[in-house]
Amino acid sequence: MTNSIDPATALPDTLCYLNGEFTALKDAKISVMDRGFIFGDGVYEVVPAYAGKLFRFAQHMARLDRSLAELRITNPLTHRAWHALATKLIAARADSAMAAGQLDAEKDQLIYIQVTRGVAPRDHAMPPGLQPTVFVMSNVMKLPGAEQRARGVACVTADDFRWEKAHIKSTSLLGAVFSRQISFDAGALETIMFRGDYLSEAAASNVWVIKDGTVMGPPRDQLVLEGIRYGLIEEICRAAGIAFELRRITRAEVRDADELLLSSATKEVLPVTLLDGQPVGHGDSQGQPGPIYTRLYAGYQQAKAAAEKELAA
Image (cartoon, rainbow, N blue to C red):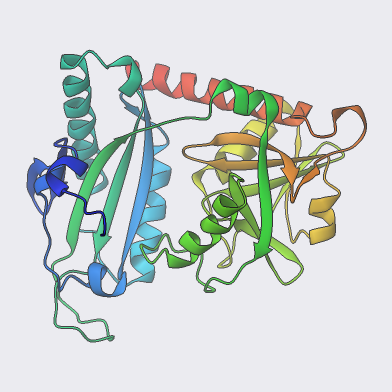
C-alpha cells in the first residue's frame, strides 16, 4: 500500500503570485504543457528578507537578468515590479504569522521567484513569442543554529557530473538533487564537488578555501553559479583587510585548507569542520571553526544590519 499526500493538507494556504494573480499556494495551478514542467525550461531566484527587508535585491535581479538572457527570455517584469510583488508577499506572510502568534518564528523569509518560457506544444526548440509563466512565493528562512555555527558541519566530496552551464540559475536541478542526495545519504550537510582535479561548488552552496589567511574561491565562469555572496564576501574581506582571491583550486589544496566555508542565502557563511570523515584544518584549531570564519560571519551580520538601517532611512 502506497502513502498518498493530500495537497489540501500538505500545501499551505499562504499567499503566492502566479501569472498576474494572487492566490493561495495550495490552489495555484499551471498547464501541464508549461515548458518549465516538461523541460525544466526556466530560471529562478531566491532572495532573503530579514525582518521584512529584502537583502541585496539589486544583485539578485542582476543575476535573474543574466539567467533569462542566456535562455533568450525577456524579463517579464521590471525590477520595481518584482520588488513590489516580493514586498506584498512578505507582508502577507508576516500578517498571517502575527495573527497566529508566530511572528518571531517567521520574521525572516525567502522569496522564491521562477520564470519559465511558458506554454507550448512539446518540442525541444525554443518557440518565440511565448508569454512567460511567472511564479513568486515566500517561505520561512531557517538559518543555521547556534550549535552548527559553534561546531561546524560535515561535508563529503564527489565528482561534479552536472552540465557545463552551471552559471545559469536554472530550474533544471536534477544534478543538484543527485549531488545533495549523496551527502544526505552520508549524514552530511553538503556535497563538495570537483570537475577533474579542480573545485567547482557544492550542491546548493558556494565553497571557500582559507589558507594562510587568504580566502579563495573558484573563478566566476560557466562552471559555477556565482552566488550573491561572492560579491558580499569580497566586500567583507576588503573591509576587514583579509586577502581575497578567485582562481582554480585543486583537490589537494582543499584537503590542506586551514578552513573551509560554505555560503548561500540560507547558510550565509558556515564553517565546514569535517570533510569525508576527516577533520579540516591544522594544529589546535583542527576540526573547529576558524578565525577567518568568525570574522566573515561577523562582517556578514554587520552587512545585514547596515542594509536594514539603509532601507529604514
